Length: 250
Image 1 (tube, rainbow, N blue to C red):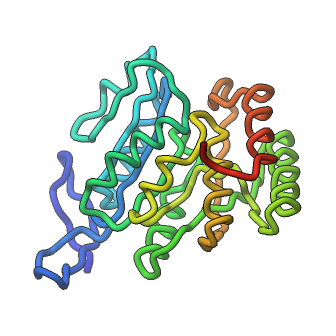
Image 2: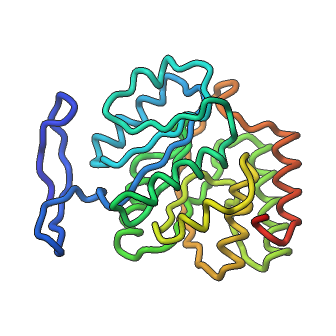
């Protein structure tokens, strides 16, 4: 049931539903926490937050992974921000968020990148699927307009993952993932603090027999230097090192 409310100084249309347990009205996406790890975010980062808020996402958690430039983060009000004193890596930031969210009254958590690659309609699409049928969902990028290096890297990693673990993961490097709350404690103990952590999460899911629902999404690419904190040589080495390790935790 859509209706308009005054929020953050302007009226926005938000869909609501009745909570059957206690009859209270809740926003449609109140059962999903949004987790965004970030490091020295660009000005566009505030657009990510505004779009989420304007579309009814109230449980937004930002993990500032030791940003040296806090100009953008300091502009954000009314949002929960968890802070690392020093840069610890994307995996560590996700774990910090998972640990916090495990104590919230939600059904699941969706992870997003801070670079605006994910379209809000795709975010809502995956969240709707989760609310209808709770499980693990991955947003699969089509890589239209993506740099050749990203396309090639993903194809190689996807091929190797299938060879090693007998599971076809179309986009092994997607940052748009949604997880049920009941597996967050397991995700916290998965090995890795950097980008390699996401590879070990894949291994945990597959080796634990947890189905990964893969949903094609539109991805927005910006021609901007240093938009990603991914270090091609060192981070790729760690990812492939973990890919060939059969276990996913120490």
